[in-house]
Length: 32
Image 1 (cartoon, rainbow, N blue to C red):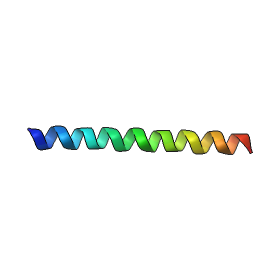
Image 2 (cartoon, rainbow, N blue to C red):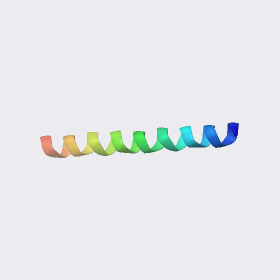
Image 3 (cartoon, rainbow, N blue to C red):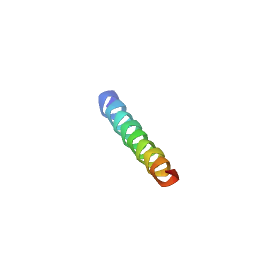
Image 4 (cartoon, rainbow, N blue to C red):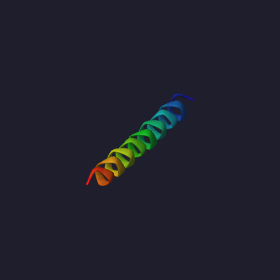
């Protein structure tokens, strides 16, 4: 159970991080 929760949290963090990275890169691209 602990492993499942930590794995889910890891996936959530990774996906949110990737989403933030895409958002930042898109904003930077629009600024240029």
